[in-house]
Length: 471
Image (cartoon, rainbow, N blue to C red; front, top):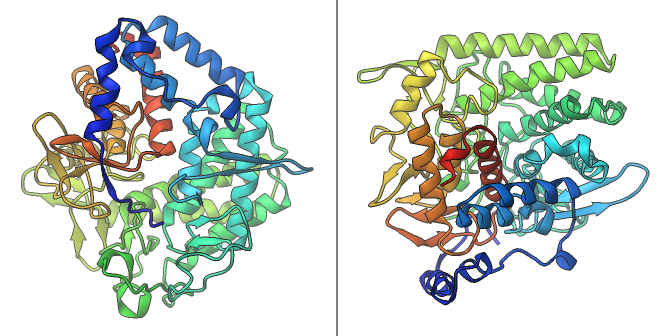
């Protein structure tokens, strides 16, 4: 099944679930149990259960409690498969379809990382995610998603690219190779465990560095090309599968956006910011485990090259907002002013640690992104947020609203985002991929563990920092 899911009409479901409020006042009667029972959960974490219990006992708003109970542990409940052994691995499914994305799997377990010191089995599970990501990078650094079964043949086997068994999709997305570094770095920060950073891990990071340099395209277009026979123009690349030409200025090409739509101009600015952060983190880890110092220096040099190019080419003078970051450029003067709902996007740069939330260019960009000057900013009767080409016009992604709240210092803005997100569950108890701007019950993807994890992260952060907003 394609990741662009069919839009489901769920008005009757939502009405049926909410109708339970008529029959009593307890939480169970108002908000039906939709979380899997414990016997059916794929993984049970004491630390996660304690967090859920604390939130449930302290937060007065029953709907936020219900949503937190459902969303925060959702990835552990539904999406993980543990493979024990001398070097354990964890497969993290996106559910729809049953494949593991390097990007999504990092996001799906991110909300658990602060709990690793309290729960060794949870720590081992995340270590297993890192081990599995390493295996996938070594299999094919240009692929974005993989099956648990290494022999499984993809529904996209006829794509004009080098498809191997076990690969779900081979869309080159620069952020896909940043995500495993982000996860490994934060795992180390939380646990101080260096045992994962063995020769195999180091080889995978060296391959990431090699791939980044190939896609700077300084001498040629590199080895990657991709075409698909599809009615969706954003599912294939022009120019014999290499995309439109760029001028080599030090940035890294990304054939596809994090949304898995083809880039218009191959220098995707949010992903290059992400790569800048990732190279600095990888260099620090290499030095910390006393790996190859010359490779660490190469990473630092690449990070500096990306930073210099971003400063020179990524900032555009907008007639209304002043200096803003472009979404995509080609290094020849062409640029795309927009933002997409997915991560990484311009809105989420501070969330990735790529830039300060107070940076004036970021603040100008934020104003542009959250306005009608962004072609993918949609406003409905009760809601507003970002969408993108992946689902279609007027479809807002809850993820964009979550990221807006996570990168805001304005309590009124955060509260507004929380209220929209609460309504967007449409009686299901979970976050979705997208919803129609005037109809919460028209949404895509019943099961979207990454969005659930991200929303759980927002609710927990709000509880710790601004509990008065959870009313």
